[in-house]
Image (tube, rainbow, N blue to C red; front, side):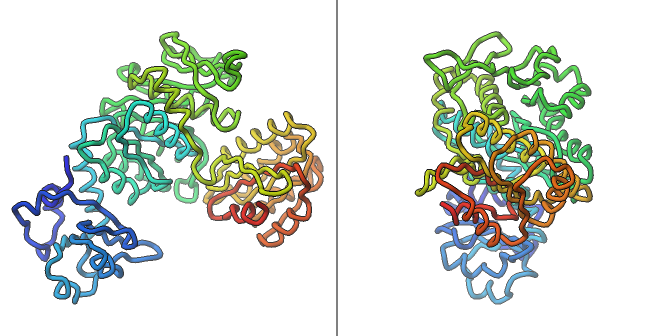
Length: 490
């Protein structure tokens, strides 16, 4: 299933304008082609897709892409310099009204030729961590994988991932993100996963998705679409929204629905699901203090290594990945070997050590919403409880894209912070966190709470507070760029 000029023309002929280069024939049309939308990363013989985005228009970089080696250009002729066609007569011009839509059409056709497993990962939190955990686990058996690069999980990133699949690919792992109504349906038509992991349901991108219920309904389209296509899904049993929505699934799909959870979760005892993977709360034994036992639906005990932090939400990713691997037929040895190869993605649940003063930081600054923020606070509170001799500080930044209820979502973090019994300082950053500061002041349950709207002032205050041996949690939405705090104190 090599992507070449012949297969590109087969997929895109209905989209192509009359101004396109005629469909060539011969040996050249059978050569393998790589697709790229970044002119800085172009290699010889690439197809460059000119995408018009919010900040940049790829049509402005067509000449740069050609000079870097691109031999095929997918673009809208009305958006590019009209002299380019004469300037580069040997280039194959694929003209279309919407290069992005045509790219997705091409990816859909290419994916449909792939007969091996395609794993989709969806949910309001934890997608990238789960995707990377799944990818790591699968390396316990497979050597040729394609997976989403970073968090490129939208309208552009998904087709670019699928178009990296070739005849050697054994499995593809695709992260699928949504931020507006209709997105999941569009992504499902493109990805058509054979297996789907749902990480969680809850608040996300409410500026466009509206309410939590509407966001959940949009995510759930991924579940129903996968099942309707004959795929297999893996759902978090402990999520209240999943519990409600799964009750409406067709009985005909029952054999294709699996659940995962941890024994410490109360909901595990409240549901009688026969197809559930459960991680036990106690270590496997004195000889394996950092591993746990995972019980399969068949009653088999699988020993799985601990995640990077002993946190329930990270154990969930281990359970989800293991459940998937088990259904794909990986052996216990392959599962363990794959899980042990996992490394946290940058800025996500990374436990970092400073080069000075025995300072350690839990950096989780790639993204944040109410669920992930609460989970991060709980995890840090448990670390604090286990190390009472240390001082624990928190640096929390705004949670973005939460819509009309955004201030309430920030205020609702107060109980989690109060229950954490942290013995250090709380540094809040951003205008929305000002609402949390006011709530904490009224409740008068915490002292040493400081609010900043300038990162430089926050860094100065934190730096003057830190002492040797201190521990710090840094968490906030991507737009807050809180990794700057770590860079300043490391």
